[in-house]
Structures are given as C-alpha cells and as structure tokens.
Amino acid sequence: MASKRGETVYKIYRALTQGISPLVRLHLQWRRFRRREHPLRWRERLGVPSAPRPTGHLIWFHAVSLGEGLAAIPVIKCCLERRPDVTVLMTTTTTSAFEVIKNRLPSNVIYQFAPLDIPSTVDAFLQHWRPNAVMLMESELWPNLIMCAARNGIAMTLLNGRMSTKSFQNWSHPLILPLISLMLSKFSLILPLSTIQGIRFQLLQASPVIINYSGDLKYAVADFCVSEGKKKGLKEFEVQLSGRKVWMASSVHKGEEEVFIGAHNMLKRNHADIVTIIVPRQPQHGQDIAQKLQEEGISVALRSRGDNLTPETSIYVVDSLGELREFYRLTPIAVIGGSFAVGSAGHNISEAAAAGCAVLTGNHVGHFSHMVAEMQRVNPLSILQVSGEKLAEAVNELFGNVEIFEARRLAARQAYHALSSGIVENIWEVLQFHVFEKLNTEE
Image 1 (cartoon, one colour):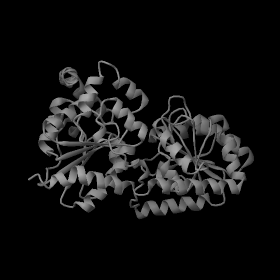
Image 2 (image 1 turned 45 degrees about the horizontal axis):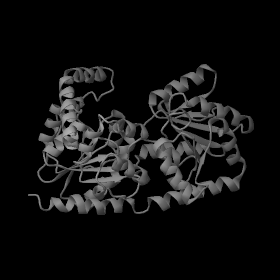
Image 3 (image 1 turned 90 degrees about the vertical axis):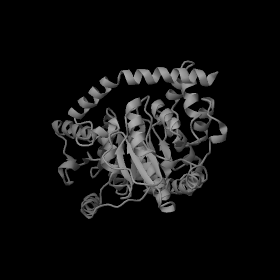
Image 4 (image 1 turned 135 degrees about the vertical axis):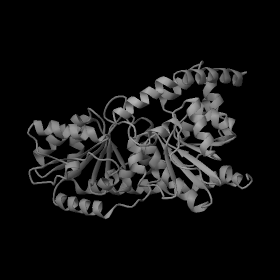
C-alpha cells in the first residue's frame, strides 16, 4: 500500500518536472548568460555528453558541490587502485566545484556536469553512460535520478549520507513520506556519516539491513599536488607572515565578515603586528569585502591582485577557490565560518585540525555538530566554540598564552588522526562486498 502511494507521488513529480522542463531549460540559459554555468560545457546539464563512454564497467560518483566532491576523491582513488579495470565517472553541479575538482581528480577519471533532475535529461544521461553502479554523496536524493536508475537495474549507494533537520522534517510530511520511502527502497547500501543520520534514514523507512556505519568521509583529507608556481607564491607569503600574529577566518558567509573585522579591530589594539586572513566562501564576496575596507581607508591585500603584505597591511583577503588547505598550513589559528549566525550550518573543521591549527568555530554548526562533538569527545581542547562577541577574547588568549595555544593545536591534530584513521579502507571493504564483487558476475 505504501509503495503504491509512493509510486503515485512519484508519477505526479515526474509529470510536473517534465511539464516545466522548457522553463528549466530557459533558466539554464539565463544562468549561462549570467556566467553561472560553464560557457562550453553547460549542455552536459541537459544530459548531452562531451566524452564517449569507454567499454567495460563504469561507476558513477555524484556530488553536488565542492565539499562533497572533495570528500569523494579519496574513495575514487582507492577504487581505481584496487580495481584498475573499472572506469570512474564523476559529476558535480556547481562551476566552483568543477574548477577545483578537475585539477584534483586522477587523470583517468571522466568528469562531467550532472544532469538536471528532468526525466528526459536523466534518461539521456543514463542511456549514454550506462553505469553499473551509482555512488551518490551525502544528500543528493533526486527522485527522477533514483527512479530512472532503479528502472535500469543500476545498483545505488549513498555515501556519507546525511539528512539535515529541515530536510528530515520536509520528507516526513505525510504527503511526501511515501515518495522518500520508495526512493530509499531502491538503494542497496547507505553509509550514513553518523548514528543520528542513520536513525533519520530508518525513520524515513530505509531498511536497517542496507545501513552500514563506516565513518565520516569529511575526515579523509586527501593529499594533492600543488604547482611549483603556487608553491613559490605561498612560500613568499609565509615569509611575509614571519614574526607577526596571524589568525584566519575561513568559509566566511555574507554578513559574517562584520564579526571577524570587529574581532580584528579589537585584537589590533593589543597586537599592532596582527594579520587577519579572511577566506570567504565565494570569491566575489572577498572582492566586495576588500573594496568596502579600502573605502573606509583600511589597508587590505587581495590575493587575486597578487598584493604583498606590507607592515601597514593587517588584513589579507583570499578571493580564490581551492586554496583553503594551503592557507590552513600557513596559519596557527583557524576560525571556521558559516557558524556565527542563527540558522547557519557550519563547515568542515577537520581540514584545519589536520593542518595543526588551533580550531575555533561558532555555536551554529548544523550537521557538523556531530564532528564537533566527536572531536571534543576525543580531546576537549580540540575544538573551541565561541560566540561572535567572545571571539576576540578567545583569539587574544591564544596569542598571549603559549601553553594553551600549543595544547589546542596538539589536541586538534590528535583528535583528527584518531577519527580519520581507516575510514577510506572501511568504506572500500563495504563497497567491495556490496558493489564491486557483483561486477564480476556482470558480463
């Protein structure tokens, strides 16, 4: 009975998405005009491929944006090392993710933009690529994609599965619950990033049999090559930081810069040699921050201009993508943004911890609350949560107390290593059993 209700809801969704597909295509053209889609490869969003399908088995990994895409790369590398006979297709949705991930993936991975969730578009995509299995990252639960893949007999796995509180409440609505229950029944494997997430999937009627806990992939920070030119530039910047008090605010959302600039101004009263590095989520936001500061008469250096730090410059704005990890290695104190405004969802804190930073974050961390709790459980000093009003005081204490400062850096690194150990191997063993061994029987 529940399955029939789910099928009915899906038929309505499918009809609606097919009906509005002309409007969606117009919207895609508008986004291309506004340079929000790739100028040459935007047709991939309509299921039109830009590469041929190789012969043999093909596994499709899909992530929506940069964070999820980067989390998938260690698993992709592991799969290719253990099964070099398999082709990997990777897709993401955003252009920002594309520009960074294209340089991080192994050269033998096919990288495309993901199709829009329109029946004709998804069908065209699947008919061309004919994947043997699909690995969806985190919360990419699109009805047409899942139902079309199931209709074609494609095995589906949800990696690092998560369901935000808001999404859980929406999917739990009596009219929508039959649809998500039907969709989850099409998965052969769900690997939630935490126990709480696993419980939410079960409450949405996912079978407990397909749920396997293997750890949070966001801890699996993969190494990648940095060009010689970039290495030289970062080394020069490190020299410019020498002898100065340095801290960084990363993944800054619009409006949050006021918190960090306010903290900077307070810290500057006690530390004239301070350097505050601000890394916004979007490059344009960084340029807007720099322009506003310059209009106020504040000396600011902007990365995209190649500005050098001078003794008079105390704020450095990084308006680029894909360099966050390198900057974590240059700063001893990292404050993770996206966490200081009510309703914020936080950001990945493990990269800063892996780099050996003393890690601070705000109180609004959303689904990253499990990561904060896990690291604090390993070592209470690993993560410090503060309000925007107390941020300057907390950073000032780290500047002034070497013992506390070094203890927090060590605690963050230790907690990261304790929680990240063996995650990719655990996931590979599960995928080997549930997905890759079955490929051997498919000819």
